[in-house]
Image (cartoon, rainbow, N blue to C red; front, side, top):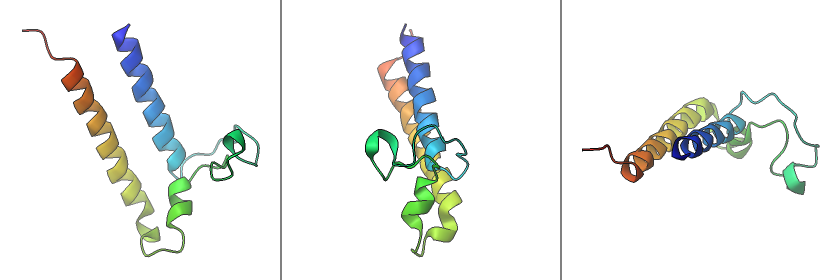
Length: 87
């Protein structure tokens, strides 16, 4: 049961990171945004939208990759802390 929870959590985090990236191509909800929140548009690429017009816009992919690595590393660290190996 614990393994299913951690796999679901990791898959959910990966889906959120994928939605933030420029590679999201699915339109799964209406144009007015998820749950009526206009900032959560169906096209994804939220990081690109947030960085548009700033000096960091050309580095969107690099920022996304470093952020994804950090988030997944922290998730692995949390798993290691909460599930110590048997002695």
